[in-house]
Image (cartoon, rainbow, N blue to C red; front, side):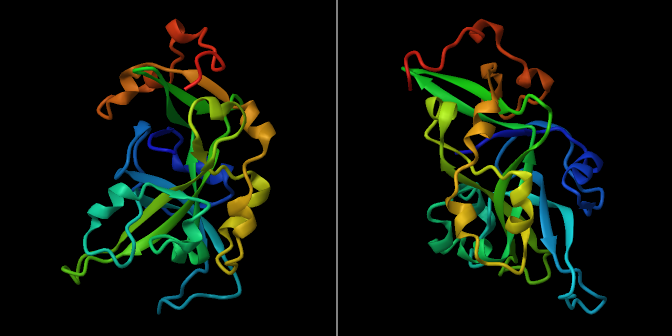
Length: 252
C-alpha cells in the first residue's frame, strides 16, 4: 500500500520534470516530508483546455500540475469523510469498483513523490523504510482523481481528490510489504494521462519494470515518521542503528 510519502520539490521543478504547466495557482502545499491522507497534494493531469463558456477544445490537450486532496471522494458520496478510506485503489480491481471505475476511464493522474514510506514487521517491531530513487528524480505514482460536490451545500466549491493505485510488490520491495504503488516510467506517462483513451488495462496490469524497482534505495529511517505531526528533513535520514539491517533475514 501507500499511506505516507515525501514531496519536497516546488511546482516549478515538478513542472519541468513532468513537462507540465504549473496550474496550482499558488495553492501548492509546502514542502512535506510526511505527506498523510487528507492533505493537499500535487498531481499531474492532462485535459482539454476550456474556453470562456467552459467548452473543451477537442483538438488539443494540456498537461498541468493541480492541487488535490489525498483520499478520493466518489461523486456519489454523501459526505467527504469517505475519502480518508480511499487513499489507495487496487490496480487489479479499480476498473470494476464503483468508487474508482469512472476515474479509471476518464480521470487518471500521476502523483509525484521523492519517495514513499513502508513498514516492515519483525515480530512486534515495525521498522519504517523510505523507498527513493538514488538519482534524485521523482517517483511517478499512478493515480486516479475525482470531482465531488457537497449535496448539502449547492454553492460550496467542488473538492478535487485523488487516490494512489497499488499493485503487488515485486523484487526487493516484497521483503518489506506485499503491496507497492503502481509506478509509471516516463515512456508510459502520455498513454496513462491521455484523457481520450479509456483503454488502460495493460498499464493497470503491468507491474513496474524490475530494474526500476531494484534500483530503488530502501532506506531504514527513524520511527519518528510514525507520528504525522513530525515533519522535517530528519525523517529522510538513514537510521544508522539500522544501517546493517538485512531485508532477507527474519522476513516479515
